[in-house]
Image (cartoon, rainbow, N blue to C red; front, side, top):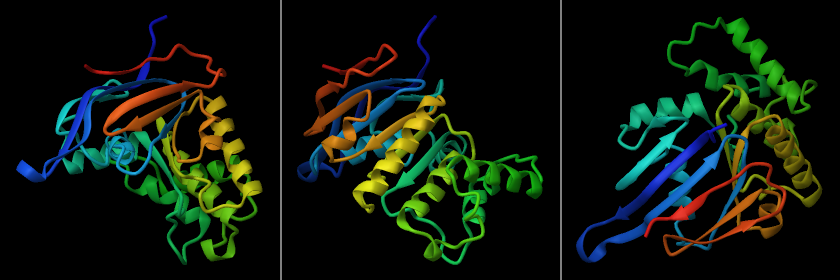
Length: 245
């Protein structure tokens, strides 16, 4: 059976500034990620890690190169079109949770559903979907609690439920355990593994090698290039990552 790539990024270059102030943040980087993979992206400050993550997450578009997400070329989409793609196909989990204060866990999770274009679901149907997703992350007894009434781990579980509620093709987790103690961080990683076992493609951005070791592959960036790729020996799919010459 032919491989199905969720991510096909070919010759991605990102340049900031002009003339003497020009900075090449990414230089002809190519990455392919198959459906159901668990990938880590690592790199020091200035390596291009955040730039690559922003492009893969449709928060920015490259200066040049092609990015195909879930069989759709999104390389040249404008900001509005990219926002629609993000809402439909990508779930985000952030280090700082980014939950709305004074808003219940349930309403925080419903929010992405309200922004779906051509949504034909009633509010009751959206609420049912949010409840179902909160149950998946073990928060069925905290749905009416606001963020300040939840522990850090519970807030991150709400954030994960919010990322999953639209059935995205890919979840990007940016330092998801950075604000958590080690025990809670372990619980969050176990939850991400459970999501991955259920077929969700996951990209985790981290500086922590112990966290990156959870992934099937860790892509290390340096000076805008892929410096090396660590294969962790627990991949169940054939994978390909390359740097265009």
